[in-house]
Image (cartoon, rainbow, N blue to C red; front, side, top):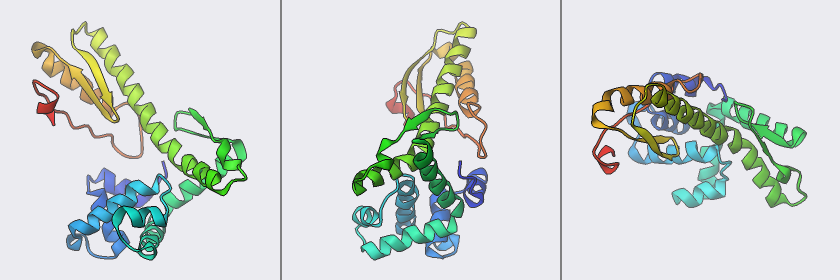
Length: 212
């Protein structure tokens, strides 16, 4: 959504996005990234989209606030496409009173015009986060509808029983396992056309626990 070239290339080349982020943020070669560096970069990667503050990151990682601020600043310098995207979404919210997902589903954010600083900052975070999280939710709903339609079109007895974030659980009859697996993977990977691939990991087991 941000069209950040570094991140898009990393995803499309099936690289470890958190390791690459650590390399960029800490200024070390990829093969010198430690587990701790990767862990910190992962926290920044996920935190950025929630509008995490230097204080919030310092508390999460158990580091000094100044160090946390440096992580965030360096990240946004390296991934300038992400910074521009977040600034753009906040500006849209200020002008329109709402932000949209890629599929034009709106979230209204009255908080962004509040006179209260803390409420206004929450509005900023919602403006950055809602388009990303909302688009992910949209894609999942499209995938669920398409999987359901395919199961029905092929008169299969298997059915969707659960959705957990970006995961779908299908209760499949053994004789339908192969075709259901193909339907699930194909429909989820083609639910939306993005700048990055939608790769799907698929597991089969007698119970949900067996697929983990």
